[in-house]
Image 1 (cartoon, rainbow, N blue to C red):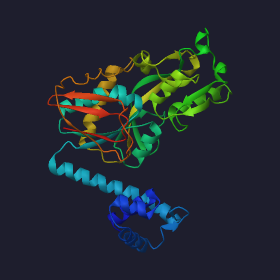
Image 2: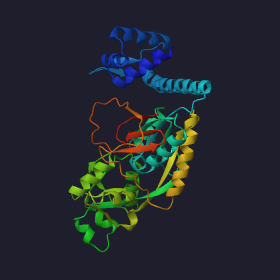
Image 3: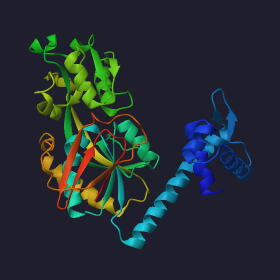
Image 4: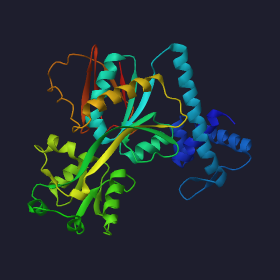
Length: 360
């Protein structure tokens, strides 16, 4: 059993078709099939069976898939650790960040970090916490900065950094805003735009309704982008559940206001998560130290957005290289960005690209 065979096996499992897997691996179908047969001979069992639209994992294949991902992750970590040991480099760090943290917290952290350690490389993914935790668990990320549950999952270590507050938001013309008092019962018949059910904010919201034996909020729209949620709320009668810190920054552009519902103000814990027993590059220690410093400065106050970007065409005081390693072909022209200005370099950072690499 070879690492190359395991890597190709995982690729086939993810693509579900030999042809697509061969294209992704940059090899011919016969060559890929030969590698798969060699692996099946080594394990003594078929790993795939023909399905309607491609190939499907057998029971042995499903068992091997989880093991193979773990083995490949460990091999990758060993290579990174040995490379850092040999070169003395600070290393490359893969960070996941929730939307609020990516927009309000990360710019301050990254700017300071790059100024002190210009050799560091950061690959950043912005998504909701359910997606981030999946990628962390799969070894695709080293750290995740996001909302955290009260009790950490068994395979994670977590450190609490700070809190922010989530509140109900509505269009500024919504009838409920004219009431002097809004109770939880008043929201039962309302429709909402909410994140997917696996997201902590949605789960907390459902729990509050459940405590009063009320039906959970009816999500007419599910959206995994906080920007999309605010835009939809501003143009419809739907309610949303968003960080209070977003409102001062957007209320001049989007017609959204806080709907005061005492039972639905969540003091959300924000923290950093990593896998138990996983190798963390040297860069992670500097990153988490910078996170703690920034969180301490923000403690007790609303998270503030980074300074406005320089106007188009104005001279940039610094320069740097930015590479988007996204595998998708979707346009990113509307993705929010920030600049991390550092001595000798400036990095443009796209928050909605699934993987951005900042290099100096």
